[in-house]
Length: 454
Ligand code: FES
Ligand SMILES: [Fe+2]
Image (cartoon, rainbow, N blue to C red; front, top):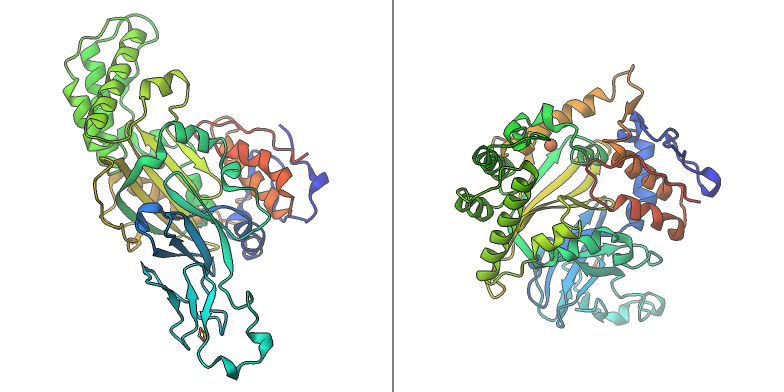
């Protein structure tokens, strides 16, 4: 295993990952480490600021907050997006709060300075009362923020020298494009306030090692065909449908109810007795039926069997540092994580699905965050959330020094942390891009990989 190459590290990083399968506990609560992330990571990364259906019409806007920053994301008249820092150039008041639709532009509620849709200052009441140097053209415009579109979302980056969005999302962007992620729309949107560090929160979803212990209802023996001999095709189909239904109910829609119904309708299809052939026949038939059903309703739907054949039907896509898409057949769950402090995180969960292209949908509104033990959580996130606060507390134990990762099953956690160390070292983007390509992948079952920053 390679150790992070320090030769490019311009800036020291406390508690840096020295041995790739060990993560120092202080990275999850030390206030100085958190401050480094605030200074050197978050202002340099592309962040998912909103889903595009939150700003469906020209002049719709939303406020995206992270740490102590607020950015306004606006749908332009030509259906692009535009963003600026949400601070009036007069005395700093946030020009907007929440969301809305603006007419000709924005008016600051304090003294009435006005800004056009492009953020350009258009009016200063009693302008003659100001010295010329405080009314310089350009200087009194809202500060623009880079904003680009990908995957049905608007993304922002405070760093003008960062590479374009797409480059920072590869290879996840290409894989999820093939699955037509941009055609998904919000069915529902929940939020959780987690009393844990933002990295710890994500790591609960980076590996499958925990499934047997934490989600025993997902372990259904009859789904696993014997390596040799025959299987009972009926038992196999029953077990697979049971799994799909458990995922659908358990994650509240991770497998969409439409797709579960489609699977039910295929329950009686003929399957060959050879186990491998039976499984592939069932999978192909289910894929085909899902594709046909969604296309018949007028939805934009990729050919799932084609994606399987190309090895591009991944069950999870990750975009560093805080965004997940978990495709299952036609639909997906999606997650976004934002730190609220060293030991507090806002996690949002979307259920995304495909709707007929001409269907009108309401603007989804941001959910009130629920606590981890809220009885409204579906069973699967409730199980994950039951571990997280205990883990954050356990990390503080005096005798606990570092996490001991499986280099084969929990490698993504290490790859993620070492990518963070690249940012905290202040490395230039050309050094960081290869690490991003390593980490913007399906995190499940990823081994520790070489991230040398050479
Ligand atoms: S702070 Fe905005 S107009 Fe004064
Ligand atoms: Fe889980």
